[in-house]
Length: 203
Image (tube, rainbow, N blue to C red; front, side, top):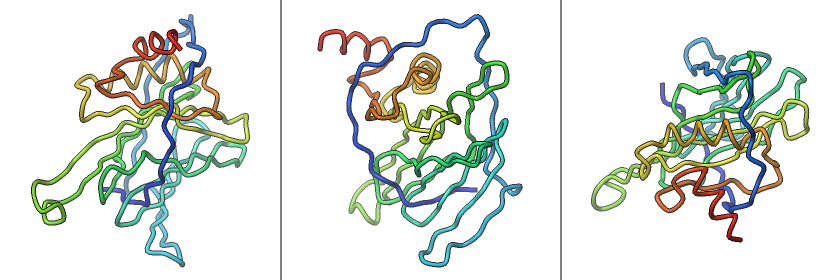
């Protein structure tokens, strides 16, 4: 099942944030899926499908899907919802992967990692198909009005270890992240959390 939805643009920037120290409790990973157990309904005003899925703990995710991209909203057990979140558009079409990785401590999720596919078919480029992948790292803030916000986008098309980078971002940056900051963009020019910290140390 491929989830398509309208992709919102994000402003990218670099800001220094607190790096979370090592914790006595280990970080664990659980996964949730966008599958047939999710509820689905068509929205009346646009050719958009809304898909609502259960998730670890008290969380739910709500995806809005159309032909050209995807956005995801996080809803906490308190009933508060985040803004629709998605990577910057890099192609004509976009789709989230059907698996979401949740980073937890003692069963409490604090961040997610969600892969996004960007695609422009060859018949629309006049040449080769343009295809890219982005990992979206989201901080979970159930106790705040923001509920959830994007910490970083990791360019999985240019970084061979993108999954490891995304987990490092989640584990070291998301718990101290200020949702007022612009998301960080990790790519070949900024390939790791350590590179980010070193660069910001010179600003």
